[in-house]
Amino acid sequence: MDEETLYELHAHVFGEDRYWGAMPWERVGYMKKYLASVYPISIDDITIVRAN
Image (cartoon, rainbow, N blue to C red):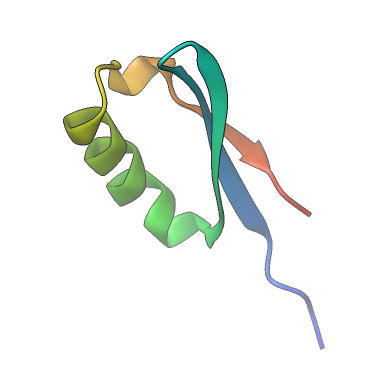
């Protein structure tokens, strides 16, 4: 059985590095928009990193 590729989102928020994940690719875009709406960061400041 193939393991699904998962991704994490990384951003520097409130003076520290934060990580959210691991999630499938289909959810990454939604989560980037959500995080940019609730934290004082730009959507471009959120980095997508492969988790596995």
